[in-house]
Image: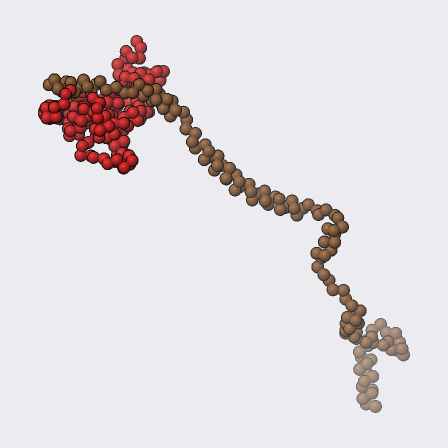
Length: 136
Length: 181
């Protein structure tokens, strides 16, 4: 190998890494050796969001049922409010009552005073009477 | 035997076994070599610190699965090449402050203009990529032909041929530029 190349080789080998490099590498290796926790904030956000989405409807539902079940405070003002909320019913007037037409009931048959009290209706006897009336 | 006295392979074994301080010893042993390679491979040598750091961070993960099929430095070299290529690609897509990038000249030499590293870089950068690689590994890093071949992913014969061409051209370049090395 020529002297020139030999000299070139020596110059190349004289190059040294900066003194701080080993410390820097050691620090970086130690840093990367730590378990990565960068996912933790994102995971927490997702968990909170999921919990909020799941729980909110349940809470709202419970709140509404409680509202229905809880009686209103009985004060005079609330009572008047309740009465005003009642559906209005028309009170029937007297004239309207009079004008109501009721169908007439069928006449009650009068009981025959000459007839002996009969417990049954004798059809043969009736026929006989009619025949006699026709021939006479 | 202390960690610094152990061979490269033994050191990596200690690291895999979880010995305290083994990784620090690996960093101390290889940081200059990785830094030098990064200086030569990067378009912007100012990023050599960051690239070296990234290589060792990947080594901290990757060496745990190291299978000892190649030398530990070979593995580190390949990682360095990969990281430097990533840095260069990023640099291509994001020019710094509108600074024009002259790719014809390879790595921008103006960064370390008056530095020895700049002179080395300037000469090596003139070589085609494969020849540059063989010069860095075989001549500058003094790897064996076999290790150079493993690092480059080629045959030993290819390494020898590339080395022959590279030294010839390098010698010519030194003569032409008249650099006082």
